[in-house]
Image (cartoon, rainbow, N blue to C red; front, side, top):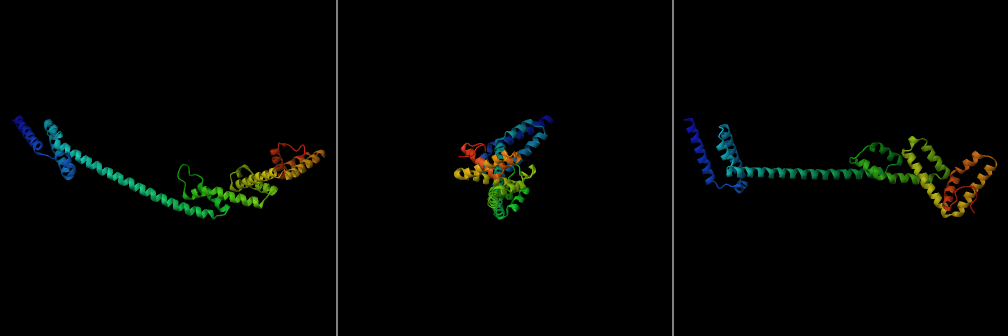
Length: 268
């Protein structure tokens, strides 16, 4: 009796499914255009699958799983959800792009303001900013630090020009020595500009002597004769010190351009 009852259920379910499949013209295209119907159909199919599973009715379960209309509705719902997900992802992408654009505009505005402010600072005030911009690593620098980096060469050169105008020859050497007393001073801004000023001033003096050889001969020969005189008097320390003076040292460097490499003889 039990087996007969079960057989009737299977027959009834098969007839019902056959009737649905035979009478329904709801394909995937229909459900894509009627998504609410598709969602309702999926719910019905899932409920029938659960019922067949709970009753351990394998044939009914397979029949429902293979039902064309259930499959069509399921595909339509999944396609709809994918479309919604893609729309949301695209929305989020555009929002990120817009936020990035706004952040960049804000960054550039602050950078412009900082650059304008820093350009008006004195050299001493400007280099004090360095402490705030030591460790940026691979990250995008702060607007302040970007402005500092872009203005650094200009501000340093302005200070170098001012030093070369204020100090010349031995005075510039003394200024450099007073600000570069030890190795720890070498990376300090005041020492850096002092060394740059002395290098650039010396280069300009050598270039001047090369272009005005008569003046080079006068300075070089004066150093040479004084050096010779001190050596004759056995004043070796004074003789060596003379050649280390800025005047004689620079003349000696300029003389090398004419293949004169020592003060042993005067230039003719």
